[in-house]
Image 1 (cartoon, each protein chain N blue to C red):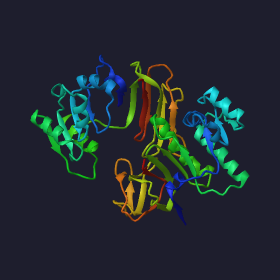
Image 2 (image 1 turned 135 degrees about the vertical axis):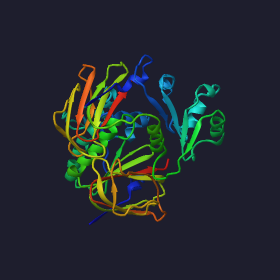
Image 3 (image 1 turned 135 degrees about the horizontal axis):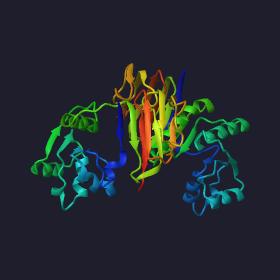
Image 4 (image 1 turned 90 degrees about the vertical axis):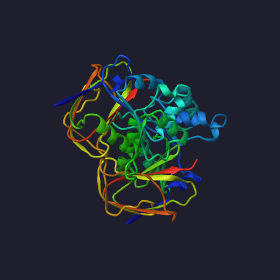
Length: 219
Length: 195
C-alpha cells in the first residue's frame, strides 16, 4: 500500500487542534503580542520547566488546558504527541497529518531529539507527523512506498533523503533531479543532500528502512 | 588503544593541541576566529568559505591568507579568487560532483597531514571552562550495539544507542572534567559551547 502526502498542504489554513509543548507557549505568546486571545491553544503540555510564569498564567486564565507531564525519559514533544493522539481519538477528529512548528533550530542535540520523536511517533499515532522550522521540513518515511505531492507552489529548491539511524539497503525514487534505483543510502557511503525536483510535481520514494525526507519551504 | 581529545582546546589561547582549520561556506563564528586562526597549523577554505574569510578580514586580508582553497569554485567570488591567487595561495580545483566541497577539502587535507582512525576508546577533556551545559551521543548513521561512558550525568553501560530505541540528548557532565566513551560503531558526539 502506498502512502500519499502533500507535505506543504498544511501551510494553507486551517488546523483542527492546536497545542504547545512547554516553552512553545512562550513563542506563541510573544509572536501574537497584542492579540493573544485570538490565538489560544487547545492545550499546553510538558514538565513546565521552560514556560514563563506569566505566559502560563495568561493561558490558564483564558481557559486553555494545562497538562503537566513529569516523565523525564520522554521529551516534551513526544509527550505532547501522545496527548494529541488521545484527544484526536476522543473527539473523533478527521485529520490527515500532524504539523509541528519548531524543533529544527538551535541546539544540535535537540534537533536530533526531534528526529528521535519522529521514530517513536510511528507507535504513537497513525497520522503523518511533519516538523517545520524556518526554511526546512522533515518527515520520516516508514518502510514501503510513498508518493509526495510537491506542487503547492510553496516548495523551495532543495530536498534530500537522509538515512538517519540506520543504513537503507534499497531506495528507489522518481521525480527528483538525481533519482535513485535500488540504491544504498548510508552515512559514509551515500546521503542524498542538495537534491531537487524534475518539475513533474510528484516525488515517489520506495525504501526498505525508515528514511528521513527533508525539503525546503519558500519564505 | 585509547584516543584522548579536549574538543574545545582549540578555542583556548593557551591550548596545546595542534589542529588544522577548515573554513566552509557559512557565516563565521566571529568570536573565536582570531584564536582559531592564530593557533592553526594549516588553514584551508572550501570554495565560498574564502568569501567569508575575505570579507571578515576586510582591510587586512594579507594577514589572513589560507594555505589553500579547494572546491569546484562555483561559490567563490571572482575578485576573492583572484586576490588569493595573486597572493600565492594554492587554488585546488576539484570537479567531482558526487562529493561536497567539505569532503574534497578534507581529502586534500589528509594528503597534507598524517592520517587518524575513528572508532574505539575515547577520552574527552571537558574542563576548558568553555563547555556549555548540554551534550549528547547520536547514533546518526547506524545503531551502536554497545556504548559505555563515564563522566556524564546519565552514563551508559554496554547500552544500545539507536534511533527509535534510545538517543542520548540533553545529557550533561558529572563535574569530573573528563568524559570517556567506548563505542563499537561510529558515534557522533555533540556538545554545547558557551557564548
